[in-house]
Length: 638
Image (cartoon, rainbow, N blue to C red; front, side):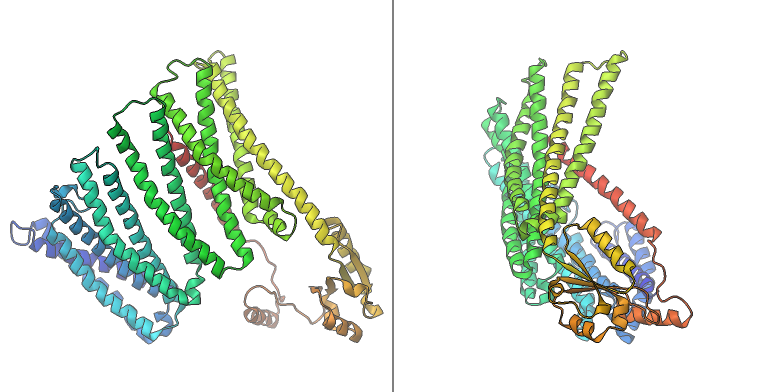
């Protein structure tokens, strides 16, 4: 209930505050609008109505929120409040930065002899529009920044404030980085196309690029330095958010670099294949992908090295290997998709050539051939390099190889490839059969041989993907079975059995069925402590009743046992076992209360229907995202 109340209180406060601020901005702008006093009637009426409606709503809710926060430390440290305070700062400072960007952009356009309407943002605004928005947003943000500083002084160790501040800092870092990236891209596009395009469009590129660099660079440098300074705090250096962002920046920048490099190769190959154009036009066509590739390479180099340093410093070896593995398999999946598309386009071109398609050497066919070769030139070497590395790791003998084969990342990759291969074979085979059946029924396609060959090409390609990854999965299973058999044989297990034979017999039968290589010995604890031979076991299984009344010899033996102890919680009169999951104190109290109320100590556990629904929806969403990703990759070369 308190969380819902906070969401309502701070949500209404945020919305009403924005209403008041933009009403005040509109009212102040109307004073500089010229014409009749106060600008147009509609503009003035709209601004006044926003202020008159928003001010009382904002004051009522904000003053109530402040009163609750001052009176109760739990309210002040609530996550909703910290999200509100940092969110308000973003809602105020981002518009201020955007208006500063618009003002600077128009000024640079005018300084370079261009019209202001060519500006990247705010081309139809005036200097007064931007200055008013900047001033009002900065004044209000100063007030809320003071409230935030007050909360920090009152709660210096609050995790909610620290977590939200981390999000806030990384937002500004990304905001500045995006501006720097596109500022470099625009400036490089101007420099690379300088010889061929000297008109207003090229000058606009320079003005836009310089604007983004002049504003984005200070924001990025300041935010990144603050983040780097904060790494002295273990909570910051070990933050999952930091690792995730470094990971995403590295992968996204690498993807942009490879894609733009592919377009550079595409234009080069198209030129070599005979596309005639003036040299200056050819250079201008290369300028766009090159202007994207260079800043992407800088981002990938810098953040890739930072990620490497972070993983070496803050993660244990197992997790470090898993993260590197995830990186490699993502690259392998992307490279496999690019290789698949390249081979598909190349075979399609060859089929057109072999089956006598007229105009095979036209511009469209040359574009297909250039796209195929460019995609293969990028995707195939990357896939070979990454696959050889991950295959060597998975085929290694020893603990490292076992971990690689059991890795969820590798299993997910292989089964995803099998999934794509099976569906691809199924749908392409269905399309091929549809063409043949239509031809048998008297309605053949215009070129049955060519279209059938194109569909058969897809069937074969998907079949190759399916068989290749199925063989890799089978090899993993064989190696895993061999490694597990060796590990099982080196892990003797001892069962301390009661007088009833059912307990030990059921365990032995189940163990022999599921792990047949596991050495299992049974020792009735009524005969005293196990001898030295049995004491060499790596694990001992005992019923809970043995712990309730252990013989002295067995108790001493258990205390000195060096292996693992597994207790089977068989019912024992007067004894109730608290589950190990969650808060043990809370569960113990809950069990005492249930016993006092005449209820069983542990209620029956069932899977929630809502959880089943969530799992189903998550699976459907994952399939939709996969299809969207494949469609986006294919659309790049259409």
